[in-house]
Image 1 (spheres, helix red, strand yellow):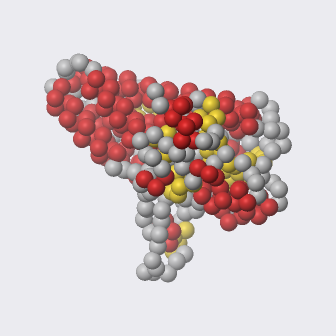
Image 2 (cartoon, protein in one colour):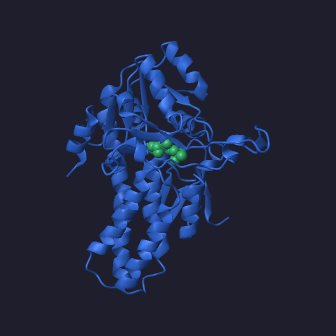
Image 3 (tube, rainbow, N blue to C red):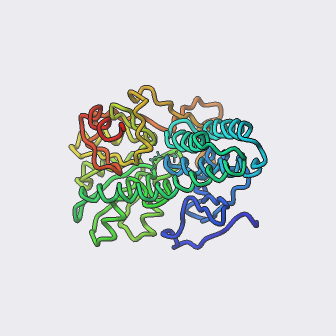
Length: 358
Ligand code: MRU
């Protein structure tokens, strides 16, 4: 197909979750990894909404960037509108994209930033307003790379030669525009010649850990071992884990963090074995308007993700199912939050405010 582009395996360093090329948006279809590396051109806002919903593009920072470019796709045929009509249509499209996934605050943050940049400008024509919109989306994309790089620079101070690190889900290059959040310290340390081992939880039900994290770290030549989620306690008990680093979809003002379902269990186990738990994220994931984790909306997904393994049914027909995509780890279980502004430590309600309230 013309709007799909296949890439070679082994090109992981060149593979980007989001490609903005000649003013066209391409998203890597992550549901096909690790088997196929396929970039899909996005030709309508509905297609972008669907890509976010279906987790073709996923991970908090990446869906923020995809959402911002989604507005470019939505509005590029609307340049003949006058200012009032353009802004009204833009708000409508932003609300539509925002409805695709509720938990990661980065999506809402990026959409709001694009809409506000247009509202703030005094330009009158749809064409001029569209140029502002596109520039803001491109800025969000470029900044995401820089923010992840800074997370890596701060987080690398926690890395030690020979250590074992457990991670859950994928907070890697694939979940961002580059470097990842949880993986940024790993990529930087690896680039500087440090040896360490990563244990990647499989992350049921959609296997972001084994399909995505294991894939991207392996492609980069980092020593990575995949385990199923229920092996984590045993691996910790064997003394193989010195530190947990995970990503997050939203950090509340008190330091509670939402992340992929299973992160809470990892943090509870780590406490038992006295292993530090670090959470890595850019400023756009910190949501000081959400007081505690209790207020974070947790996405519930389709039952088939739990009742089926691939196309094969693994639970009885008609069975009751719960499928929350995320859980909230209380701040007491978090050792520190590695951000682009430094490593934030308890008491989080004070330190987060000091770092992120401008
Ligand atoms: O459902 P997903 O795959 O979007 O969940 C992703 C995660 O939970 C990540 O850990 C989180 O978004 C941080 S990504 C840097």
